[in-house]
Image 1 (cartoon, rainbow, N blue to C red):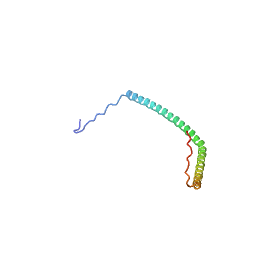
Image 2: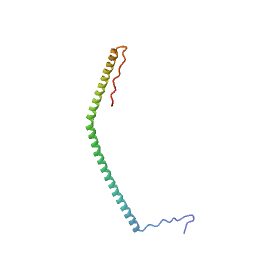
Image 3: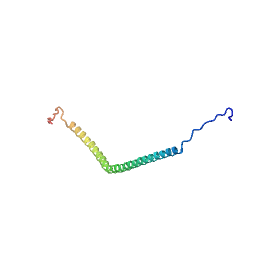
Image 4: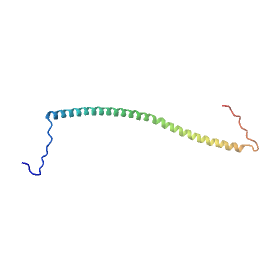
Length: 116
């Protein structure tokens, strides 16, 4: 006898055990294949990181080899700048001396041009 106002809910029927086993087997194979792809990807990443690490070591060694020559070049350029500054001072002194020694009333002669 049914009670008034009560509803019976029918539950879906359970799949057959063979279908459950087949689905579980397929899922296990998919997980195994995914695991294999993940291992391959991680191995590729590890190899790439090892190559990058080796490249960074070579780069650091190159920088270490360049440090001293660049430092010496900076010292040479600083010395060259000081020499140019001193030479500029000497040129200014010679120009002032030549203007002081110039004979008044005499025109300045230009030097003959040389062809290039």
